[in-house]
Amino acid sequence: MSTIVVAQKNGIACIGADTMSSLGAVRQRAHHVVNKTKIAKVGDTYIGLTGTSASLVVMNSYFANLERPRNFTSTESIFETFRHAHHWMKAEYFMSTAPDKGEEYETTQFYGLIANPHGIYALYSYRTAQQFHRFWAAGSGRDFALGAMQTVYDHYQEVTDIVRAGLYAAAEFDGSTGGPFEIYTCPLAAVVKPAKKASRGVRKKK
Image (tube, rainbow, N blue to C red; front, side, top):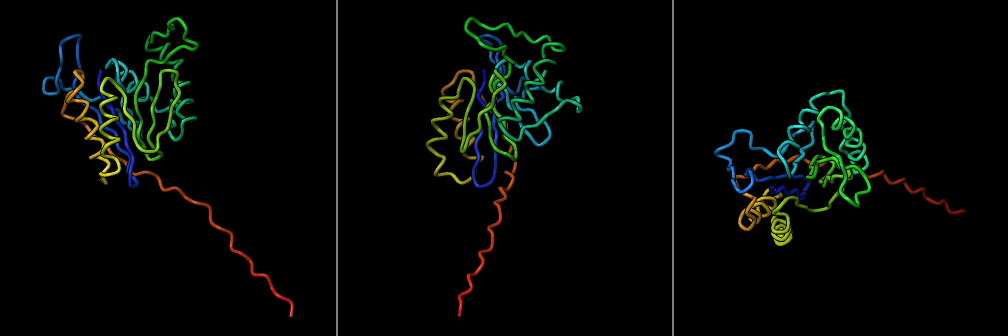
């Protein structure tokens, strides 16, 4: 597994991940592996995936075709993007979609986090997304990362420091998480508020 975290503060969105992978009980630390990243960049969007390393390879290959739709501006658009991708994942990448007992839908084998100018999101295997106000974490070190970020969020002004705190805590206590860490930031899009209508003065009769 791995640990991926996102946070946003003071107009900046940030995503970070550890760089350790494993083959069963064998740990592969970053200084042994060239392609150690767990975060992909699709346009202005950073996507970090947990689980098998094949998922990131498949996603990079899929979005390398610029004709394929990609919209990560909201939870609804993320769902539609991966709903469209699900068909091609089965047809071209031989993705296993056999549901476990009790599953209501086929699963897309992606689970991770997203950060872009529109916010920070979690991506789930049913292709649904969830948006967060402050931070979130995914992967085997999630609980440790969430606790650390909750502790420091109101005290740290730099969003990268909040993300590092989560990753350091995960690496300290989770056996499947290890540094060094990769961290990326992007400015959040300014929210344009509707202009207030000018109030008209009421003329008094003389």
